[in-house]
Length: 279
Image (cartoon, rainbow, N blue to C red; front, top):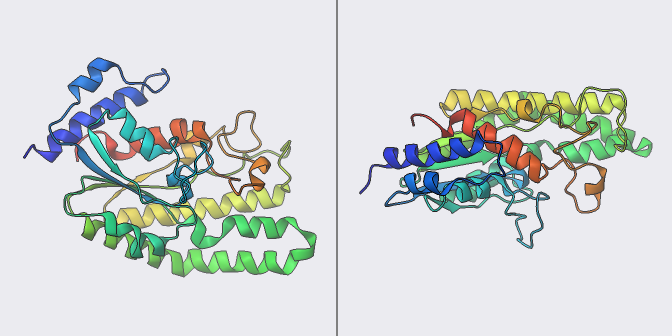
């Protein structure tokens, strides 16, 4: 059987070449030919609606998986050198990854990507409650619950999830992502009906969530992809946001990455964090 490490390097070299160009995310035929391998890389994409690409492109999939999701982008750029298993699903929590999605992993899995944690906190629901003057108590209770989870429950659950994934896929390269900060640091925010104080508080929550995910990844010796940096300048309240704003309230896609956010935010962050280089 071909050496999985050699396959990994060839596939990822092609993906890096694509990510570092300014073209429309299409690998040249020569690069695709060089990265061909006798057996494809076994890739499993775990996580929530962000990993699924919900809102980034039209889809009828029950889990919200779309062709614009970063796992789908990665598989396409590999031009047949990757076999994608895609259990990521809308509303997924850390426990869903442990109890359901991790069953798709195996000792033959070569690559795992993972985005999850925001649904455990219910950030979006708390934000909506805090926008209503009639729901002051729900807002206060929601923020207290988020603080408790970030201080105790979530770090423990993230550690358990990391152990589950690394045990189920012991030879895999594992890359865990964070989330972009939702709002730019600005007083004016045209078209986004969220008060400045709530925008600041929401960013603080996501920052703490990212820190918890990064620490769990560090302790588990897996790679962490910081997406807040590539999204900087493209949050809500900017001229060209890579996140869906108030228009997403109708179909529950608000705060999800757009197709540009998936392709120019998540995809390069994954490549930079650990899809390139030595396994």
